[in-house]
Length: 427
Image (cartoon, rainbow, N blue to C red):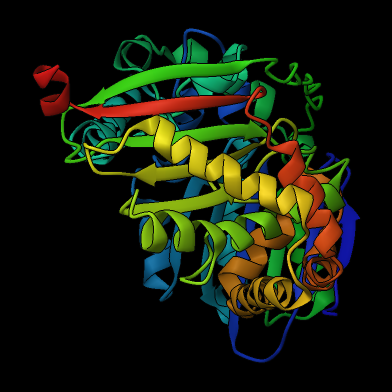
C-alpha cells in the first residue's frame, strides 16, 4: 500500500499527500463537493458551466494565464463535472509543484466572474452539447435520457449537461452565490501525488492555501428517494440513431453505506457483459441474435462517482425487427438464472481478475491515481480505500453476485426506449 498523509488546514481544506519518487512528475487535484445534483432547479447544467468559468482567469491572473503557466512548464491540466463532485487537476514536472499549488489556490480564492466570461462560456457549453448530444447518434443515451424515467426528484432526474434556456438565463449573481456556497476551502479536498518531499509540500500547501478565507461548509441534503414500485417506461426519439435502442435502469445499493453489495453489482455487470464469454453477450448477441451491442455498468458515468442513489444500467442496440419485449425477456431470463444459480468460481474469477488488473493499471498512472485518491477522500472520507479496492473485489463471492442479480427486478426498474426518427415516421 502506498504512503498517504492527510491533514486539514485552518480554513477547513482537507489535504491528501501521496508521495511516489519513481518519476520526476507531480500531480495536483482539487475536488469540490458539488456536482450535477447540487445545482438549483431552473439552472440545469450550472455545475458544468461553472467548471468552465474556473478556467477563465482570477483576480490576480488574466484569462488564459492558467493555460500558459501549466503548458509552459510542460504540464497538462483539465477539469470535469460529476454527479456529486467537480474536479480540477494538473500534471507537471516535479520542479513545478509550487506553480500548480499557486494556480489552484488562486482560483479557489477568487475566480474572474465577468459578464463577458459568462456569455462566452455559455456559448462554449452550448456548442459542446450540440457536438456531444444533439448532433450525435445516441448522444444522451443513457445518461441524460434514462434518469427522468427512473427518478422522480429534480436532483436525480434532470439533465446535468443543461437545457439551453436554463443556461442562457444564468446570471453573474447566480455564479457568485454558487461560488460562495460550494467553492469554500472546507468543501474541497486537495490531493498532491508524485515526486515531492512531504514536509516541503506541507509548507507549500499552507503558504498558498492558508490565506484563502474560510467559509462555512454547505450542508449537503440527502438526495434519497424511494425505489420504483412498478416498471416505469419512457420513449426518446433520436433524429440521428440508425437503430432502436433500449436502456434498463435499476437502483443500486448505497455506494458508501453498502459498499460490499455495491461491488457485487459491479462484478455482476462484468458477468453479464464483459467479453465474448459473458452471459448477455452469449445469449443476446451470439445465440439469439437479438442485439448488435449490449453493455451493463454501475453509475451513468462509471463507478465511485456518486453517493446514493446510484444507477445500474443495461443498454442494448437492436435491429428494427426485434421488439423491446424480446430483449427484455432475454435479459430477465438470464438474471433469473443467475439469481437461482450463482456463477461458477471460474466465471467469477475471470471478472474479478479483470477488475483488479484494471484498477492496478489505472492507479499506475499518476493522474488517475491522484483523481481516485481525491474523489474517494471526498465521497468516502477514505483516500486509502483506493489501495483496498482490488482486494475487496477479490472477496466478492458467487452468492453475492447471485443476490445482486435477484435485486434487479422487473417490477422496480425503468425502461427507456430510443426510437430512430425514420422508424417513428414509418409507424
